[in-house]
Image 1: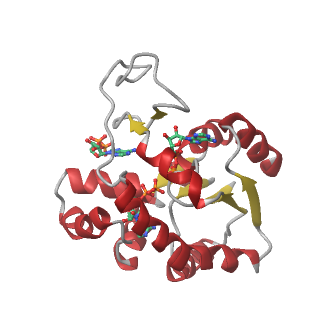
Image 2 (image 1 turned 135 degrees about the horizontal axis):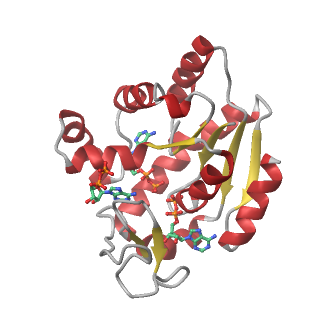
Image 3 (image 1 turned 90 degrees about the horizontal axis):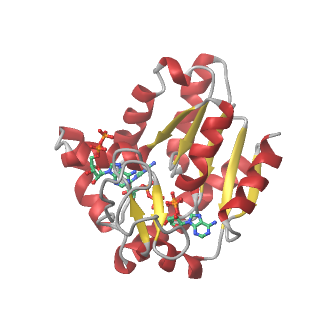
Length: 213
Ligand code: ADP
Ligand code: ADP
Ligand code: ADP
């Protein structure tokens, strides 16, 4: 399957995507993770992306389209993929369509993680991440067995630099202004499935499975 996950920061995309990936053997491409790795490695791309990311603004379309174009060439992405956090602008969606047209394939479903802004601050400020695996915890909603450590490896968890209430505000502004139109773009194609992303994680998983079955 070829899937896109769209939702505001903290809506649960990163929590649901490993489950979808394991069930359908897809490649999982998260532009946020790829950009953070580039920033940490101080690559030319990372250097260009850092300022916008720190402010909670979107990185330029050309940069992210380039990353995705490259990543989609991986053999593991040929049979299907989950795009998590991409496309985030209508221009990115159009570029993606051009890429897929060339291969004679198209997006099957767009999962819209619909949720009220009011819930997101608590989710974002309580988020803890195991950097090497991408596993995500939450101090209140998904606490690790040992505080501050990953359940599987015991390695330390980190908090993202942009997971503050102040930066969340600009990330939400960017979402409403630039990314919500992407949902309309795919609605016109009749491939959007709306999820109740405010429900507990397991209930969201059940909804995802219904949509994909
Ligand atoms: P979240 O987990 O909050 O949904 P991400 O990890 O997907 O956030 O993205 C973190 C940051 O990386 C964004 O605030 C933005 O600066 C940048 N970014 C990620 N994906 C894109 C994209 N498709 N277009 C532009 N910028 C992006
Ligand atoms: P996104 O990738 O969309 O930014 P995440 O999946 O990282 O969001 O979730 C943000 C935070 O909220 C994480 O700390 C995660 O553990 C928690 N979380 C995810 N889904 C739910 C849910 N359905 N209910 C409560 N908390 C959740
Ligand atoms: P890679 O997986 O590309 O080897 P790393 O796991 O070494 O990259 O991550 C480099 C840095 O990027 C980490 O120290 C962490 O700060 C950040 N990072 C990586 N993945 C994530 C993620 N899923 N969420 C938040 N930050 C991440």
